[in-house]
Image (cartoon, helix red, strand yellow):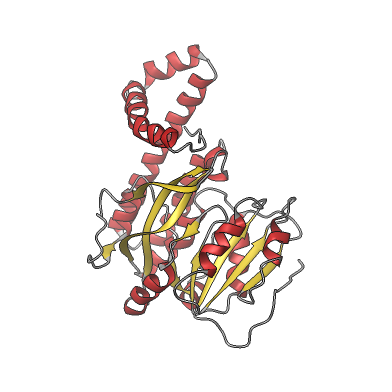
Length: 327
């Protein structure tokens, strides 16, 4: 692999922002700008370009700021290995993550650091805001976990253990945590393209860490058409395998192991629904009828999802957002 660093810095920064980039020339500039305009300035951005075939690396290299460092993969290896490689080059005491189609709120790093200094052995998380991708930029839709942990400026961080974390339908977070602890635990995203974020965090939970959740919407997640996380047919299978592999980490913790096993069964149900939904979209009515006869819950689940998506699509259409087709 070949490495290029945009300017060398002498004093290690406090925070390293880890960015895995692949064919992101349209959005990577805005993503990095959201970091460069943070209220807290002592950071570096490590962008690992995963053998992009577009102008992603050229956009990053064109940013005239010494805090931006650019790494190159000679071959495409996926988001997990790219993040892990960037972590190995990180110089900050703390690390956090940004995807190339997402953005930080202006005070994110400052807020996360303040909480992290009080809970240095834990995982710091904030409100992830689902946003529509529109011609006018990102338009917020809703806060993930917002229904369980209401947003309030004066609220202290919520303590969330492993069982509560895996019970959520959306385990998507972009953590803020100590780099030396990640290295000590040999935390790795692995090679899977689905569930790699969770795979990275599970060793922390096994170590005894918990999530300290800041109920503020500070991470803007772009709902992108055809994104890697939503387009792979085997994404649910890969996600399940992450938890199955993790069971060995919690052989000494029966409550945690039971929570993971329940998550595995929930994902299996999701796999079944995805097969049903794909067959329905493809017009394979014989297969659909056979699945309904075997699993009657598929029909009410389909109705529930259709009704649940109505507010989302109304909001998207109102703001001229891009359609995101997911199962």
